[in-house]
Length: 134
Image (cartoon, rainbow, N blue to C red):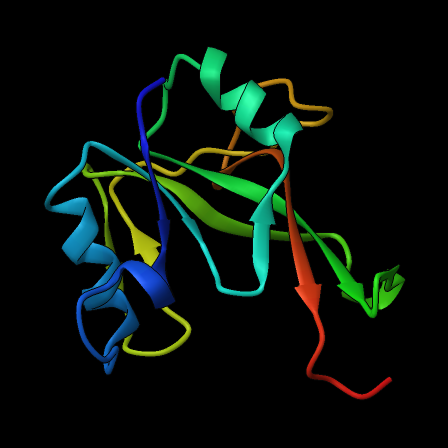
C-alpha cells in the first residue's frame, strides 16, 4: 500500500486553527494518509503491516498504546483512532475532529482485517505521553 506518513504538527504549513481542515489539506494531496501526532511513533509492526495491506475500506482505526513515562497505563488503553485515512472521506470538527463517510467499517483483532460495522481497527501506534501527572 502506498501512503503518506504525516506528522500533523510538523508537516502542516502554518498554524493549525482547525484540525479537520489541516487533515483535509493532506487528503486533497494524497490518496492515503497515515496521521501521527508529535508525541506518537509508528512502530515497525504497523509499518510492515501497512506495506502488505490491500485496502478495502475508506479508512482504518489504528490501535494506540498509551504510555506514561514509558509505562503502560491500563486506564488509557485500548485506544483506537481513525489514523489511516483515504481521500474518500473527510474530517469534520475544528477540535476533536472525526471522520465522516458514507460507509463505516470495523474491528480487526490481531491485525486481521475483517468486515463488520463501525470503523476498521488494525495494528499499533504507540503514543508516548510525557506531559500529564500520574
